[in-house]
Structures are given as C-alpha cells and as structure tokens.
Length: 410
Image (cartoon, rainbow, N blue to C red):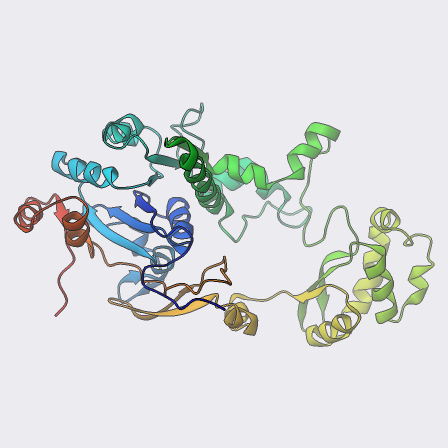
C-alpha cells in the first residue's frame, strides 16, 4: 500500500541540499531533475533580474512559462556574488550544502573566488558539478557554446533531416538537455560514492561530450567500419520498413524490425505476396531493396487514415503510432494517467501547467511539487535559517544591494 504524502518526503533525495548557481537551460534542467527526486534546491540568482530565462517567451503575467517549468521545486535567493559580502553569504550556504551546481563558462567561478578549492575550505565533503559546452580543461574551454553549437559539433545535425536537403536542428534542445541529464547522473554517482568515502569531488560535464555519447553508433560506425553517416530522414538507415509513412490524414510511424512483425503487417494490409517476394523475405533483403519496397508500401499506406491504421495494426500487434503535435501530446489521455502535466497556482503567473515527474515511485506517494519561485522569494528565509543571518543584518544587506528579497505579499 502506498504511503500517505507528507510535506517532508519529496523523493529519494529528501535530505540532500543542492546550491544551484545555474541559469537558462542545461544547468537548471540538471537541478530540476534533482528537485523532482526530492532534493532541496536553493537557486542563487543575481539581484538585478535573476536567471535570464525568466524573460523568455511566452510570458505569463511577465514571467516565462519556460522558467516556471524548469524551476519548480526550487527556492530563490537573490545575491550579488561579485560583492565580498555576497560571496561570503554564498560560502555560508556552501557550508550546509551537499552539492553545488554551476554552468558558467570555465574560469568564471575562479574569478568569483568560488571555485572548488574555495568551496572545500568551508566544506571538504561538498560535490561541485560544473556543466559547460566543452569541458573545464579542454582546448575549447573558452569558446562560447549554446545548444545549436553542440548539435552542430556533435554530428547530430548531420544525420537529421531528409537526404539531399540542408542539415536540420533537432526540435528538442538535446545539446543543453544532454548536459542536464549527465550532470544529474554524475551527481547521483558522486553522492553514492561519498557515502563510503566521506569525500566530495569535482564533476566536469560537457554538453558536447554528452550529445556525442548519445549519438551512439554513428561515430563508432566510422571508427570501426569507416562509415560516414548521412541524413536518415524519417526512415531508419538499417531497418526496413521502419519510420514515417504518409497516410490519408497525416503521418504515422511503423517499427517493423523483425520477421514476426513483417508477417503480421503483410497479412494485415492484405499483401501476402510480399512475404514470398525474394527481394523482401529477410530483414537484410528488405534493407538492401528498400528503394523498391517503400514505393509499394507508400501506395498502400496512403489509402487509410491514422485512426484506421492504428486500429487495424493494434489488433494484430504491429508497432504503430501517429506523429502527434504538441497539443495532441498535451491532451493525450495517457499523459493525464501518468500525471505528466501538473497544474499549479503561481504567485505571479496564476494557474499554470508544468511537467510532472518523469520518474515514478510506485511505493511512495510524494508531496506535491512546489511552484517556481519569484525572484528573491526565499532570500530572507534561507539566509536566516541556513546562513545564520539576523534580521538586522538582512536589512543592511538589502539596503547595500548585496541581496534582494521579494516583496512580502499583502
């Protein structure tokens, strides 16, 4: 039986405190994942305007929908880290934190005197995860990097799009997301190791490393077999029939990757002669002769709608799915069933939807996620409770512009 939700249990990382110095996407996505698993995430933002992604369109009552989604389950503390008193307050928070995450360009933390040697002076067991475009020690460390730069250099764009057409950027920002995913994974590994060694460590996560790793067989095929990958379009380069087909009212995908599915498919479309056609009998035959196979199947697939194909092929167990638009995904019954979109009440934006937790914990019922913070919403609370700052000291720091607190609601 599932346990009752409690305010204290937010996931398996309950009790882990993360000091989040990140901004925009790669770093905030890493800490977003940690927060989803229960970590207390304290987001340090500059006192002027905070994380620049707060202003990314679309805006809801002046705050970004993107920011609201990436920064749920976090607390906002606004500190001028360049000011000596601001740096001191950050170090006070490092003392009581398990993990520090940052995605500045390499060298910025050193200039702020908040690099790993500075952190371990106040907390020898702290874990510092640095997420950057090319890595902390690489020859390209000083080069600026964004998602599209990572996509280009990793080769991902070279295999995306239709043959004979210009390269296409992945619609999902996988360059940034790879940094976030591998950053969170690295932190989990370091936390586990610390349970036996008692020591923290530095973690160097490169967005380019991450996306190249996700390229899987493409660069490895070249190194092992000399094969240079080309754009694969909507169909698989090694398996046929596999990929996109136009139907009467849109597009669907088929995933016929072994003989059982091929037999069931040919019988369902009422073309059993394809099963005995020497060009298409085995998977290797279908791949070798795909230029002849696809025109035959294209003429068949265009004759029915997405719903008709889904019903027919589901009935016989052939893998099939419609290519859905974002509104169709948002309204998909399965997404409601899996609680992948959650409605929250935000102090500034009002009622908003954010992504649900992608990892489920069937034996524990977690406390509800908290909305993304307004800038400086938790400055006074965090500095008072965790950094030993008195009310008088907080007032003085606010007057000096070292920290900023959100206005107290009426």
